[in-house]
Image (cartoon, rainbow, N blue to C red; front, side):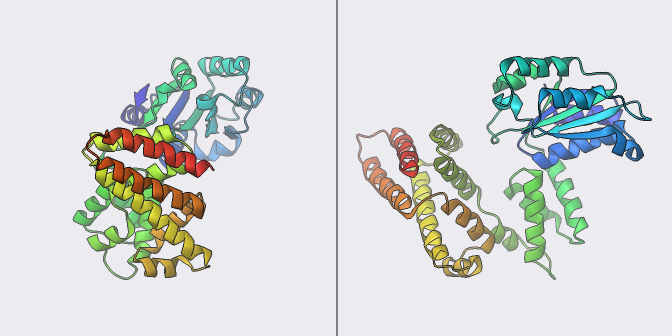
Length: 344
């Protein structure tokens, strides 16, 4: 397995292999890299005849073979892209024998084919080689881990996106924005669009960035509640332990979790009264973008479930004030209990 920097060097030097599997959470970046490889090996005027895209959710072994076996037309190579090839993670799309044939094909890709695929990992804590399918393909193709990007690279990319909007941003504000936004190209692009609309006709200030982007703690708590709503207690516990390892106080985490459930309840209540996000945002002194995000999360819970989750938080707080209890165990039990509640 190689890192992004090594892949970029291979692209720059033109020393490319003929089968790659990219794995990461940033789909926009992986698509961009696949485009860069394609540009390097296939002239644009020949692309219509020598470029095939396959849907990883629907693709069969025969589809892959049929796409690769036909010879390129007026070109030395043909590019075959399998997007969202998550069968390397789940392997549910293929029988064991079919998946073995897919692995063998990656190992014996015809010399006239450049076979490019990418896999979306679950989150930033997910690692490519913990998935058996990706581990196996690492012996056949070049697996590239698209990890978190360095700050300077993200600043350059963000600066270019601002330029496409003909919008200037100060160097201090740009660095502050990058430090605060999630390190994902697609999210960065979306947040820049929101920021440009929000500050139309004036310069971007730090206060504007604060108004649109949640704090890191709020972002982590949002993710944690998402794991609860998706019935993934083990991921919620891993995230909580990560936050504790980074120095977060468990009592503060409990307060933030309880506050998030209260916020979801209030927003859900107002949304049920057919109030639009702008009105709700004004009532709760939140930004409309934040409210829209919370409305979506609130739809994953019923009012009864949110009430039960808030009650569990209050009971946990009472027990945590007792000298005889293990605070970490209580918090883990809370997360498991809220998942059970959200499943009812």
